[in-house]
Image (cartoon, rainbow, N blue to C red):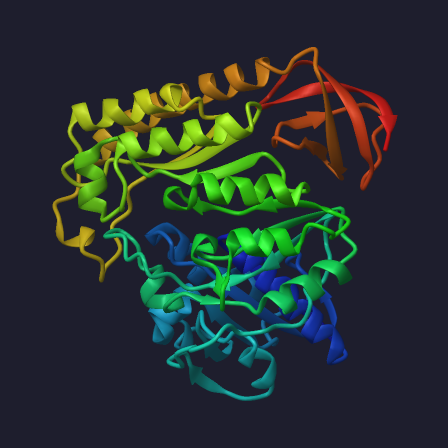
Length: 408
């Protein structure tokens, strides 16, 4: 029996899908994550935007083209948000949600909709099937922030943290050369007295590079950065979620910091890690965003010295506070997107250019490597899984060309 696990959305979904792949293998399935003829399809859906939810629904028909007789199971945020929209699709036999994803494995062979269960504690899943050189390790789920544009707290539930001992056990067992700590809001991690900084100290003897997933700006304090330094194996890459450079828009988004506070957090990071990459997300065209508000988002890219910016237009999600506000014309959002993407590309090129001619350490995957500070590099002769000392020589499509100095 062959199963295809198809994933849409975030890194959290990817790692959960990898766990479901492992669980299916333990039940005797041959498993793939590539669309193909199979005896069972499992779709892990996304609802972060209306477009993501649409693609999640379309995935059912897309996969059934390979085998119209195969049953389809659906889980994830989109099916948590609109379970009946999936249950009514031809071929779908089982619908679960975004919480307690392990129940998918327990319900194999069942039929119906089981998307209403609320997860009270962190749901342990099988150790993820390794598909890449890096391992993504779930440490937290859910969110308490309730940003005005976001459905995730309603779908994923309130924040829940994994036991620190369980995190350490998986980190030691996974055998990866780099481990990415992943969750919906890892800044809120807490197991008893152990917060995220304490967890990093606990992982200091793991023989792997540790990389942090997306962080909230509020976690950046001198104490937290001291924990990062003390750990010794945490990479100098901080994805500090921004969303807007305008204080008025940040208030409307229910983000709990100001532009000035965000810039201060960046300064703290650079004080401890002068070469750090600070990356972020920015939403363009939030309701009532004026041209002046947008210019504040444009200017903070250079003021913060950002290394990479993921930009995307505002997408109203029914059920959120922001969806009740008047949306900006699509033409305005499109024009602002073009401007901010140009600014983001210039900032990325400026950041990478700082390191041309210098040596860095890079871990290579199948299609390139990443330095400690998350510069994507291509080097002739590098093997997948190899860690090399490299010299960056020239810019190359959002990254750099490098030459190998020695393998470490």
